[in-house]
Length: 464
Image (spheres, rainbow, N blue to C red):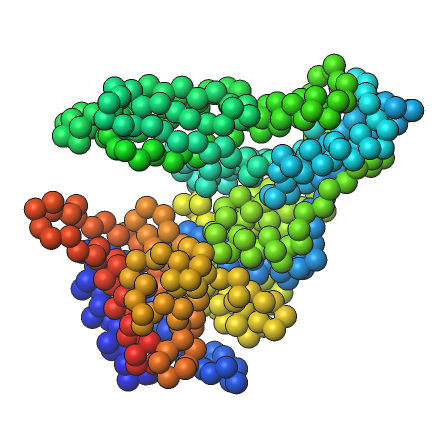
């Protein structure tokens, strides 16, 4: 046991009563040494915690092991060509999380360049790659209108997300919404602009209702500000959204189309006319890890299930595939609950020990996996760029870790570089975090969690 391990335990007094903490601090190693598979300090290592986005470590590792860095997503256009027209036209979607309106436009330009001027009959949107729910069991229902929890469907375009803002200046009684004119969704604002005192007295907040056909109503109340409030809306009906974009782009490309756009979940059996390829998996995983992209994570999770079992992917076979793939590397998930790939589901339960085992495997196989360089760096990039408590000169650039946060919990899994140039692997999981509201009459100070995180990592940097 490290002589400084006893300095970590008393830090829990910084957190509110009732907060649960689990941590493992591994044996320090240097750049020329191999990671040593034992802990110098640990607490509640076997208890199950909600992992939140640290779940993406498991997803990234499984994807690297089974799909490999060169894996790509294909979005293909199928049909039968006759002279200058194409019939039985069908888009085959495989869940490419990077597919954009520009990619769609380029596919249609290539179609037009091949001599096609007309589409006969209907256009089919094929989503047979996945089945089952587009959200994982245990995801919070009222997050589903927000982009970070958008549905992981086989059909993805523009991240299945629309950005806008809410104008709430003091001269207005009702807040007004702005979204770009080219976005085919309908937004209505019934949001009152009131004082903070009125808001507290009325128990009022900003809320949203989703209607069919990507129609949204914002209601409730908000306090005035000169700054517009950024908003992001998850597309509730990807087929309707894509259809509107497709019709606009066909008109722009001067390709005649008078049929309907229909949906299919049957296997495509016509020839490929145009194919679009995503960036390689290595690039997609880097984006997922740095930005903690939930859409990418859940699509990878379902894709792993589809590839491993050679059937439409879903959250169930994704979980089974992950268990079997990691078990093949000596990483057991037997005592853990795996519900999705993103960590959004509250059904997920993972112990600090499991996370530590995964982390040690990633460190030991970094030459092949190259996963450590996809993790955020404190004060530098990704979800750790502005992480409170880790932005001091002493800690900036010293922590490489995957973050994981949901209401009432905050997790970090990664490596700390110490003042002795040691690398220290760690897992820190905090749940049941419920601080008291800040007293407006008292000087503003850092939150208990910020104070705890700073003290935890300062201790490691200084003494390990």
